[in-house]
Image 1 (cartoon, rainbow, N blue to C red):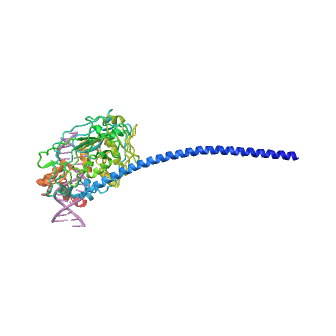
Image 2: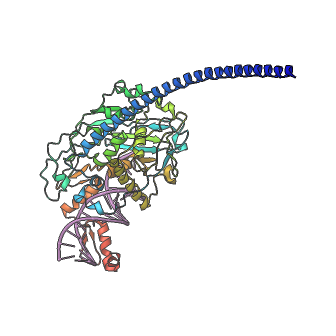
Length: 485
DNA sequence: CTGGGGATGGGGCCC
DNA sequence: AGGGCCCCATCCCCA
């Protein structure tokens, strides 16, 4: 019995020793693994810290850039001119009497444009001399196999004179006109296109990350414009070609009118940033002050098709090959920025190689501006005659206004239309200082001075200078008028 | 305040 | 393609 007890005791002690040994071994293993684990964790943490630092540096860079941009915009904004944005959109005629007029509703969600897959984008420069940024939509059948570039050197219209008014407005000169200083230097005629067709094959955007090509304006053979850093700021994918034609044209012979590309006196002299409306932000600003002084640029984005989709982010589809061929995405990317400033639609190019999906943030200024543009768009569509810019009529109206996407049948129509957005009024009356966006409007206006009233009422002796007014007058006889008002 | 004329802005259509 | 004309909407001014 005693032996049995001793045996059990020995077994128990052995078991205990074994258990202790096992526990010790386990603990050792755990400790080893834990140490390794700790080491790995610490390394990961180090990496995390490094990445975080990088991120912070990047954010700092971005913030600095934004602050810089904001400062620039504030400087431009604080100009004494107070060229009201609305004035620009209202055309500055008659002291902006339209401010409360028919274009009251200014906020409208932007159209959501989506650029379709496999649709190459071609940028080509239109003819003429006026500033023009518009988008040409090419239907599948119209686009043809290869996207071509067109550049009509477009001899400058002799009427495009830089008729700088010499102030001292007489008669019914609008306030803006009277405020024009006669010392406003003519802006350099800068022809800026996102595609330099006539050479400079280097001006190509190779890929999204090919920032070397993009920032190397010098390589393009085109000297950067003043403040050219703006051209690239925030939009490294941009490729610009700048061309200073520097020609000054003589006024036409028409004594009654001149084609004046005037810079409103209240426009800041150093508004060279506007000479490049390709940047989104600049573009936005251009919507307000991009005015008579800058009519020489033509930028065209040819897009095979534009599609409107609900709230889906807009997508650009870029054919890389076209980019290699000297097409630049600069404008498209600006267009992106521009649209980002809208109420939400993100316009991006989509393709085999997505080019850009990141949008620059906007400020309230830009938002307001774009609201106005949108309003114009809304109004245009509300008018309904032509339908939306991206209506089924796109087969014929392939040229889009890049401000409001309204479609037109030819680039010149777009050019004229875009004066709504830019405030450009190249036609000035020499008898007063009224200026007009269209030649025919000037011609009609000149009846005010000539007293010509070719429209006479058959019911009474009244005569009118405009057919519309006669028609309105006729309603008096028919009893229609009073009920209208 | 209202009605009517004068005038401009802007788009569509035609040549 | 480009210019011109027409039309409509709208605003301003005045009696």
